[in-house]
Structure formats: structure tokens, C-alpha cells
Length: 389
Image (cartoon, rainbow, N blue to C red; front, side, top):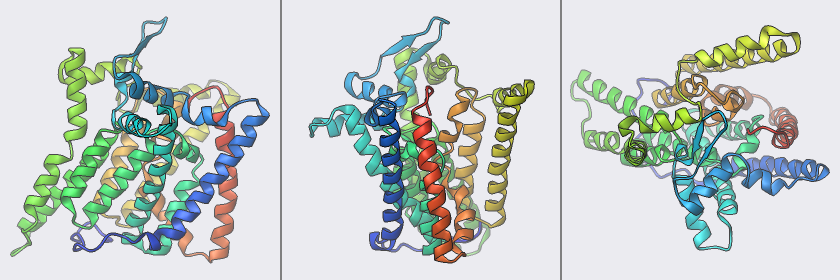
């Protein structure tokens, strides 16, 4: 499926793990390098790499939900209320389940879940890319995702790896016509992070486009219509269920979850706050360099997305990546975390993967190895800093 009008491929057996083995082994090697560099860097500063990965920032909030349930909140001196209701429940549920059947604490269980999920995400990214561009590009896309500057988050007890795994496999199910599976995985993604809306949008828009295409083509295939309708019904249940439950618990009604996010000074303002944040960087010379870097980063995202459109990526990938970008850039707070919020937008890497796949194996290996080292060093420096990723 290489353009917007190509119908979904017929059902076929799922991708073999043997075909994905080079990608998964390469991914594991990159992540192992990052962990080794983090351990050495942290040891020189008398810090615990294990604690940095499993018991700080969002990891701590997730493990508290797993241990104590919802209802914990922190009231700050300025009046803000940080409630753990802001964190979606699938990762804490899995932490609690793993902890219940093993000697692991919820925090360490979250780390195990994240590591397993990161491999599942890598496999899903490979499956999607191989389906569209072939096996060699599939391997390159996985390795590019692994060597992202914020790739260390894939090894933390955060929800990004779990979400990316569910999103990638849901998109693969859409591409291969497995509609009920796509809807179920989209629903689970919606229980993982607010950006689950991107997966739901991909399922809905692609299903609607299929309905429209069938109506415009005499004798169009209609046997799978009920499967698409079922996927559209299932896909939003996870996110909608949790948001409505939060509204009921807080007494805020359907918009109660937005009130919880407002307590964290987080919301959706169309990018106005982020634009002001960037503009403020130009008030002095040293920070102006950071401002230029932010503008260059946003420009790179837009450029990559335009290339994705020009290369006629399948519709579900374009919808998914577009919504992830919009939600990340238009959030009104936590600007330093935006690179992490963009981590699930793996379709943006596909043009680079295709270009890398055209190089000689030795040359692409050297390029990826160099970037992997830089990513490992940056990740170690980043996590040993004072602020959350």
C-alpha cells in the first residue's frame, strides 16, 4: 500500500519474527549501549541509573497509581493541583499485574513492561515499514527510532514504548485489513496516553475513506463493512471510558479530565504558548541560539511530514503522524518534554529510512553507529540533569 487510494491488502499471516530479527537485534544493541553509557555516567555522579529509569518524574506517578490507586495529588504553593488522574491507567494496571505475580516492585515491573513493550514497538514499526517500503527500509526505520536523541525514554518506566507498540500494531492492522484488531488496539492505546486520539483518528478516517471509495466504485467490495464499523465503534472506547470516569469521579462531567490537566497547567491552545516560549528565547543572545534550534526543529518536523505526503504514505500513517505532531506542538505546557511527546510519531522516520536503505550496508551501518553513540551520551546527560524528560 503505497498511496492514498490503494485498498487495504488482503488478509495474510502476520509478519514473521525471523524477518524482523535483524531489526530487533539491532534495536536491542542500541538500547543496551544507551543503558551501559547511562550506568557509567550515573556512577561517576553517585547516582543510581536504575532509579533514574524507574523511580523519577512520570515513572514515580505511574508506580504510585499501581500501588495506591487514583486519588493522590500534590498541592503546590502557587495553588496548582497535580493529580495522578492525569495519568492514563493501562501502564499502572500492567505494573500492578506484573508485581502481583513476581517479586518485582511496581516501579521495577514498569521498567520490565517498558522494555518488553519497546521490543514490541520496534517489531510493529518494522511490520508497518516493511509492508509499505520493504524489509530493508523496515530495518532502517527501527534503528532510526532507536537512535533518536530522546531514545533513552524507550528504556524508562514511561508509557511511550507501550503506546507506540499499540499504535504501530493498530496501524499495521488497518493497512492489512484486520479492522476489529485495529479497533481493539486503538482502544488500548487510548487507555495509555491522551495522544491515543491519534490512533482513533487514523482508524476512523481510513474507515470513512474506504466507505466513500466503495460507494463511488460500482460493485465495490462491501463484505468487510461491518468489520470497519465495528473497529470505529471499539476504537474510542478506551480513551472515552477513562475520560468519562475521571469526570464522574471529580464531579466535572465530560470535561472533568480537562480540569485535571489544567491543574498541571497543561492544555491545548493551538500552539500559542509554545510560540511565546520560542519568542522569549530571543530576548538575549545565549538563549537566542536555543530559539533558533527550536525553530529549526519545528521546521524539520514540517519538512518530514511534507515529504511523507509527497511520497504518498498510506492514509492511516499520515493521519496518525499529523495528529501526534499537532497534539505535541499545540500543548500549552512542559515545553522541554515535547521531543519525548513526539517519540511515537515514527511515520516521520520513513522517508529517512528509505533514503538510508538505498546506501551501501557498510555506509548505513557507520552512520547509525555514530548516531547511536551520540544518542547514548545525550540520553545519559539528559537523565542526569535536574529536569524531567
